[in-house]
Image (cartoon, rainbow, N blue to C red; front, side, top):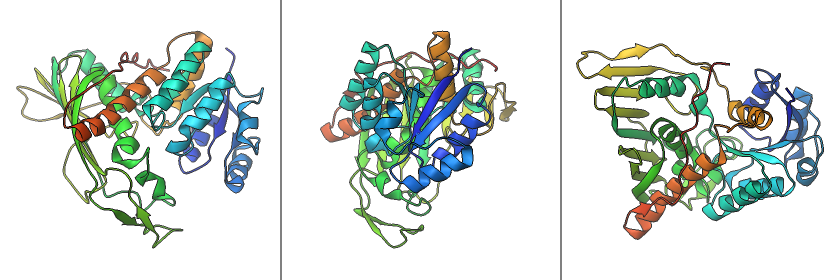
Length: 361
């Protein structure tokens, strides 16, 4: 089987695990042939460590004949520009989350990609890991009966306490919903299917944040986006979901995700990871049962989504972390904010298919 060649745009915080996995555990399935970053020092250092050619200009990398797929791991507000340039150049593109900052931007990328028969993929790919894939099998096999409801909670006090450059988390395309919501919503859509309607309330609790991490310790950030979002989701299968994402909470005892069925409850592991634990409690059981992971990739397998997409190009099959699902997640996330601003429900205009379960490799 021919191997697709990947060019990486963006060598920031998250690039390290991509480079490690795409040259390591997935190194026989794809090949990283070039990388670039606006900060030349970062790109050169990564290139030297992983023996990958550095290309100074993003346009030169995108147009390189030695690149088939662009892995776009720039900051959220740059996703659109890089993705648009990629598809216009005839390249497949895989974006870190969110797909783009705005709906219209993402629609344009998907439209051009469709016209050119190109693939668009989108992070996260954690739903392909052993933990959530095990949950998918349990649901599909009827362990908790018919899903009737779900909850999802992501709450912390923001990234300014540990991230070296946290400012973009408080600008357009950032915030707890657009930063972490994709993990939770992608997991829910993989498990329960698409969303038809949402409502929501959003709040900005603090006008400014003070960075306490290095190297920007002491710098004040202006907060431009809501930092606490509470939403309700109506799924096409009839289930009702509740989600909270917040950068305003110091500590809590909430679960990551739970699915409530007609015959029991499924406790889903952290959707920002690939592993477990997975718990089930059937309606007559007195205790929770810890379920052994039934699928592959329990370790940090970031890069699995783009690898699946690369192989799907060659095999001419649908890929799992696809642009339609990533756009549906983006539409739903904006929907919470739209509903809060209007005081009404948002009828979700997009939809997607549940991606096929990941078979053992």
